[in-house]
Image 1 (spheres, rainbow, N blue to C red):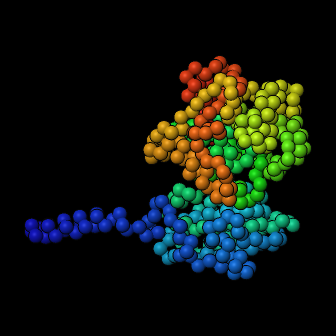
Image 2 (image 1 turned 45 degrees about the horizontal axis):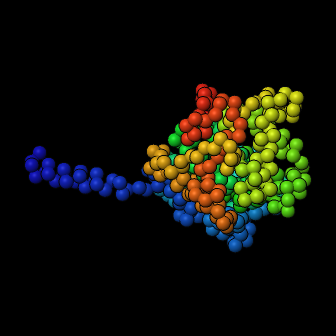
Image 3 (image 1 turned 120 degrees about the horizontal axis):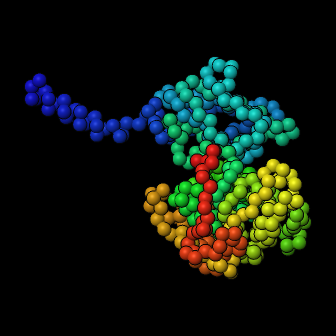
Length: 405
């Protein structure tokens, strides 16, 4: 080979190497892209209702009011070889099936209520047919649908794992967004910096819109296991007595929380201020019954149904937001390697921003009378905190159990 030919080939090789990062057709995507706008999608119903699936607004939806099966066909771009469907339900269906090409056998089938946000992967670029059957007298409604390419979905696509059966920490709050607003950076810090299993439980969730915002917020904060939602009505009452009556009485709330303690067996529980932060009755009930459930969860004579399933559990540590005794001040403003140098407070603020329908007068902040860094150790079976910079001080953690991340 002459020197001239060698130089020419070397130049071509260098140019190809330099151009390679810019060559990203769907066929070789590793991290996926949103290709919804590149697909040809057909479905039944009025045109304006169809557009609700793609307006990226969780308050609108494509809705079918009966158990009748509805179909959506999706013609993919030619260069797509694999990807997924990301479905965000406002009202879950009875049955989902996905077919490909001319096949009469579904490659995906899920019956019964499941996760409100679901991801279904596919291979090949044959036409997809999504069939959704509603529940009797209820139907179903789908607020958003995305089609993505690539081996892995984009980071914002939620692939939920089952609810935790055991947790190192339980964060128990009244409403979606309380876990971020009042508990600050607890989720991202302990989940990713400390690699602990964090279960999040809500006593209420007002509607499908807030549920989608709840899931978006949790996903942004780093949670991958589906949360617990008790289903108590989310209605602001005039006082504590009427709020308890709305929820069926204190014993009903205490029983639910005691059941969570027994099932999850958390080492640490975080919950609201006893005075409800700014006096919210639901926050007060949550804090009160979190305290009351400590003794009942440890008593084999109380709440026999959950005792039969999970036995007893004596929670080692319970922290209350803003509690005046045995105070601990968490620093959520430390940089975290797991999130590219952002702080846990930064991540919590980003997650809180997912709750777009809530025009809160509060912000996630370490400053002010409702500081998300200030807690008090209300109960401990392992001694007082000395360092006062870690909820798990004096705790010996379980070995990681089967099913944890």
